[in-house]
Amino acid sequence: MKSFELKPIGIVRTPFQDLKNMPIQPGGASGVRGTLEIFSEFQEGLKDVELFSHLFLLYRFHRAVRTSLEVIPFLDSEKRGVYATRSPLRPNHIGLSVVHLLERKENILDIENVDILDGTPLLDIKPYVLQFDGVENPSSGWITANSHEVAAKRSDERFL
Image (cartoon, rainbow, N blue to C red):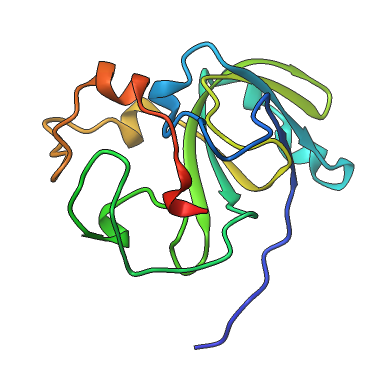
């Protein structure tokens, strides 16, 4: 297969300057605000994005320096396949978060519930659509933590 290059469409701005002690998922970042600075050449693509309450963000774990096909996730003590986790150590270092869109001002999107490191390259934005993305009776696999445990968990050095 051919490899290909991805071009960032913008930059994620958040209060998180260090990978340690960050929330591990948006569920642990309730109320944390940030912005998406969309590069001017992609601003036209934001038309009507403000009609949606939530957005999927696809981004590059730009500080990930290694890859591992098996990891010990933050909410477990057992090795798991990287594709059964949200670890940044995946082969393409691509991250996914769902954030709450507060407001759009030209090429700037104000967001909250953001769990992303400041300066992260933003690869794409997709609207969260209940009719497309809401699923009934989902299984969370090996994850047994409740929402309070997820909210309280912070990152450590295992994925640096």
